[in-house]
Image 1 (cartoon, rainbow, N blue to C red):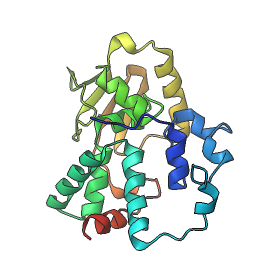
Image 2: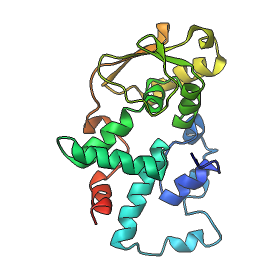
Image 3: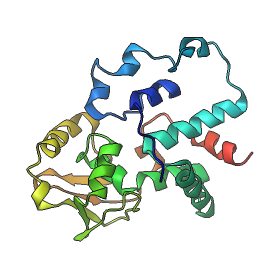
Length: 210
C-alpha cells in the first residue's frame, strides 16, 4: 500500500498547524513549522492570502485528520463508511475508530514518540495484545485488552526515552499505563473529549456527504 515517505514537516505546514508527526522534535525550536508557518512551495506565502472555498475547507479538514493518524485515502474512506453504520454521530464514531488503532494506542501510551514510529514497532512485532503477538497497526483495540511490550525490547534506549517523555504529552483517561511492567490497559472506548487536537469532524462528514 502506498504511503507518504516525504518530509513530515511539510504536511504540518500545508495544514497550517502542528500535527506532531516527528515526536519530540515538534516541541523544540527545530520544528520547521515554528520557523516557516506558511504552506510549502515557491508560492507558499502567497497562499496565505487565498480564501478557501467551502469545498476547500472541508477537504483540508479531511486531509488534516488523515495525516494525523497516518492512514491512506482508501483506509480513511473505509473508516468513514463504517462510522456511518454505527450508532451515534458519524463524526464521533470516525474519530473513535481512528483512536482505537493499535499504532495510535501504542503512541498514546508513550511507547513511541510518534504514530509513524509506533506503526513501525507494531509491524515488526514488538507488542502483544492479551498475550498474543499482533503486528497489524490497524488492529482495533477493545475495552479490557492489555497491550504489552515484548521483554526483549524493554531495554531499548528509545523505549526508555519515549516513556520518560510521555509525561509532557500525558496518557488519555481511556488508557492506563503501567510503565514499570511495560504494559497498558484499555479501560474504555475513547470519547470525543479524549481527543484534544483541534478537529472539526462535522466538516469531514459534510465532505463525504456532498
